[in-house]
Length: 211
Ligand code: AMP
Figure 1 (cartoon, helix red, strand yellow):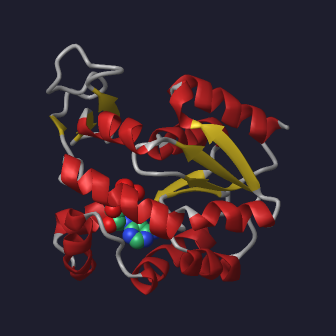
Figure 2: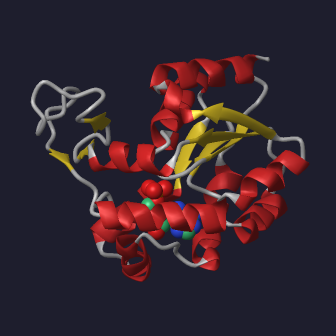
């Protein structure tokens, strides 16, 4: 196993963080921790946390830092085999809170332009059953409504509408992109061009983890 087990993925929505994090977790045994997935689960179960988060998520805005740090901190501390963080941290304040929790081995930034993001996310579909992610333009399933892995229904995330996507990209540039410099200054950053496609991005990540 790679000695690098405390990983963060940074990048705009739609850059492929979720897809890559799942592959990293399957390959290395670290735990995939996605704040977006945890929040969607809370919303789906109608919990108080879900109730707090839903409005922010539907508008493509960030859920308040303290809510997120309280939600994810314990899970990061409990991830004994290591972790790949997907969607956290998303602000400098969250990165500072993460510093208090512990050290990181590497931060991988996957970059993608606004227009690439809009093209990808308007075509994204997610399986309701197993969470597998599809893209109707780049890797369409045989039936655009059915998951090839589990037969579940493929749905569009509510925040994958074009107006919300554009807002999410603005939020990324304003609040999350400063993390790239934050982690570069600490010597933790590796940058990957998200346009090269999912397999090429993953190969590059494997190289980084085995270096
Ligand atoms: P994602 O699945 O990572 O694109 O996240 C979906 C939505 O969940 C975001 O647009 C935010 O509203 C919220 N969210 C996820 N992670 C965070 C975070 N670290 N900080 C604040 N809001 C978050």
